[in-house]
Image (cartoon, rainbow, N blue to C red):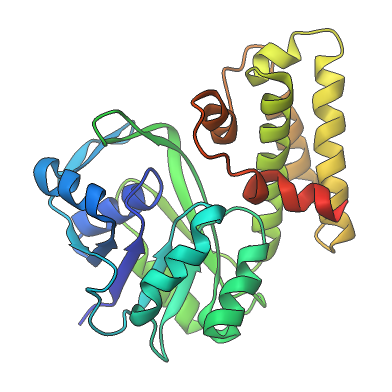
Length: 282
């Protein structure tokens, strides 16, 4: 019997990876709220993707309807929703459950470990450009998405390899990482810098880079964030730092942060998850 996977959240990230895994035949259930449940019952979970469209009829459960533990919980919520999500999925956590969080930042690892025990919590991160459209469909653009998972202490374990194999499917790459915390810090610096640049300057990466001193400003933000990672014991690898600088100083780039898009739409802004803890640590 295959592993039972509970995907917490059927939004732009969890919905994408969960739908891909379900379409590959994995035993996937989505933990959703009433509004999303009704929407997905009526329309299905639809991916509009640069690597192939798919629509599935997802298996879903609401908080209070969980009956027994799952093997893997793929946690994909915003930082400000973490406490509520933990309360909702607690009945799904058993003695052998492994939680794979895809939140940005690092603080959630301690919060989850305090609640469910250190052994239950793995490291995880992903790279995907996706959003929900007005019809609730997941629109993914850009290159092939990637999901990375690993033991937080860097061990190469059979359990980690098995979980990485389970969390796989067509339409994304899965990596079993032996340096997952470094991967998470690398991504956090990128996203904290991107969110700060776009939100402070109210523009895309290209808008900022084409202004006088715009590239210098972007580089200063990047290096400020990178200095926090280094002080915490996770200095960015040369390739990661160069890639971040190159990406966030391109004059023709239309790239923006999801935090900036939320800001423009007067939606809740995930500032703590993207930027707050970085600058607090500074």
